[in-house]
Length: 370
Image (cartoon, rainbow, N blue to C red; front, side, top):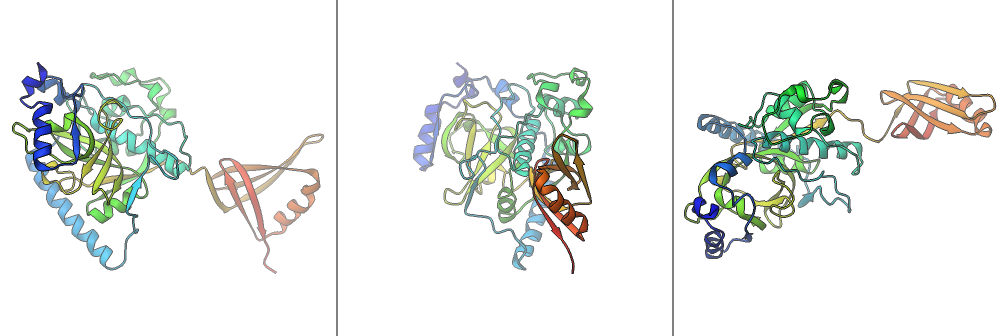
């Protein structure tokens, strides 16, 4: 049996959990039941020992610099808990995906973070966005053998990533030529990404949106079925490899990160896992920064000063006032009765501010210096 091949059964893990008083449950998951070499294909974050050492030193240095900033009053002031799956009843996180037996976790963790960040920036938790992990992984330089943690971020910044329908994912190495012919017109890009290393800086970043992160995976992780995961000391609980995930929240009361995984909704807590803070073996808090992204997408709602004002009056038709604000033209339909007053005030003003929801103007406010 596969569990015998792994040398670590669910009963072994459960016994260790009970002995150590840990607060999570193990179960018979599909991935835990795979042969060792097959389940390792569900990882895919590549890193060498020397790189781990260098990154740990860099993270420690950045964390110290961040903490000095907090000491002089620079800090966002994150709440005690944040979960982007439930913000006043709204879920900004896209559906859990399954990378299958291909080491493409970097693209799945990165795309998940970009998708959620786009919804947050657009102020629309229903925004339809499903990015192509295949495009990112196989056009960006990665493969089923894995990729570096920031490789997907670099590609999303330099080139962008298409929608899923342009290049549907399969858990095998795929030629980039499989992408759609009009891929260049279907790209979503990020303008930048930022690393966060101290606990406070990470929480401040997550309070604004999910982040990309890396971690070490041990054998018992595959059998996670719920609770706040802490690596057990069960015999044969070995290092399996490294994994990229999206951190979608945290909870100081439970002392954990809330993570979206890429092993399908049938694993863990409907595809998610809560991981306890400060676990040295997992490296999540020590060897990689958390990376937030700035997506090139316009917020649905906003305000700004109009650069140009135009009026479109069609004979026998309606009247539309146009304003160029926030980098694009926006409009508002008005009645003939309002035409004279609004237009006269707008064209006589020193400045006209407009508020909008997508392309439609919701409020016009002319300013006149007397």
